[in-house]
Image (cartoon, rainbow, N blue to C red; front, side, top):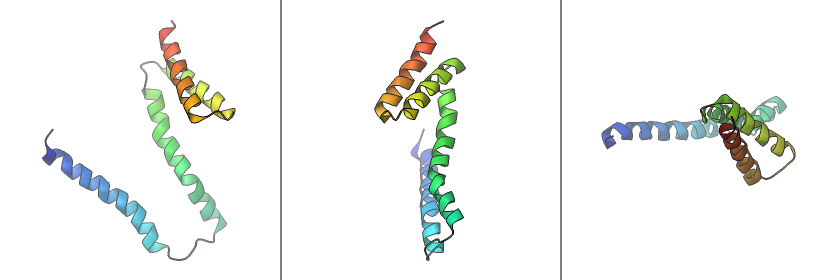
Length: 102
């Protein structure tokens, strides 16, 4: 793939990323006092992260059962307040084990 093919995509992504961050800064000069808007803005990063992550989790393995096993392991350990490294390693191990077991 040549740079002439890749460069327009990189420039477009850079502009979109910049605009998403610059436009709210330019438009909202006063502090946001609405409680509803503050709560909405508080949860936006979590919703975006979930929307980007969940589809990838269920398409990362060739079988849905292994994805479900890994997700279940991650949810249980996260619910028990385990660390990120423990949760991710256990989820990967559970997914791998589900793939290897018939």
